[in-house]
Image (tube, rainbow, N blue to C red):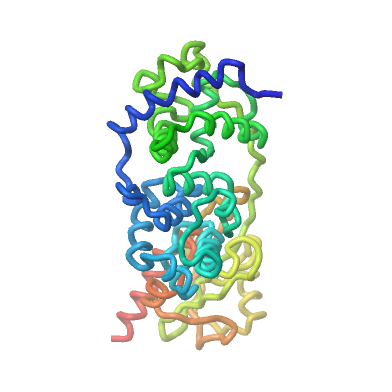
Length: 365
């Protein structure tokens, strides 16, 4: 069964020339787009761009490449350094898999990314989309990179009302696109569809008058473009209440601990925390259970952090301690900023942490 109408192959074929002309004149400027594509830089940028906006990625990419300019240096990098470079980008499993991929490239492919989609798929952290992006952008192969933007463009272009979340729909879209890739222009075609979906064929309110494919777009002709694509509603996110303890010692150092090696934010540093929204008396009991002597306790505000399928609703408590409990790692504010990678889930408490640390420094002078 085909998701598309019989007209789809000819429509996809007809889109190539106008789309490439538009891209030649309107391509977005990106630090990873080079006249001679570099497979390593393409790999880093595509992993960073997974579930992350372009403007957010740009400074991270530039800093990462400046620190680790080659696949060999990435493969050999210390994990704490690697996580610090990634700090704030989220989805930390991406950078761990990125390093594993680099190590496999060094070990099995002589330090060069393989110019083969199936071999790229064998690397940790690389799925169908990323393999297609690297294969076409870096190596000029006729391999589409099909993500949400591309699916939206194709659904509107053909006025297709199938559920784009269906894996079979994604596979058929990839096959139809692969058939129209022009020799010598594979990199440009992949990036032109990406750009069209990112700046013109937008969700909800497409800029149809600006679209180079307006004349052949069936959804524009039928007036259905704003309603497309069809996508099954996402499952409602689970809400988890948490209490975060900002523990400061009398020397001005703050307590950190590492999260478990599995699950959300696995192996990353965090402020000590407990599941649930604890009352003041429950906070006191938690401190007693952990044998923490205190000289002051006050609320430190609240913050919310949204993961893909989960929301953390966090309440903070600022606690001034006597001594430093050996259960935790105690660090200066400087080392917290320069050495330890703290996920963005805790950045809502940065103001409180900075203020108390500044007060401790002033008091010590």
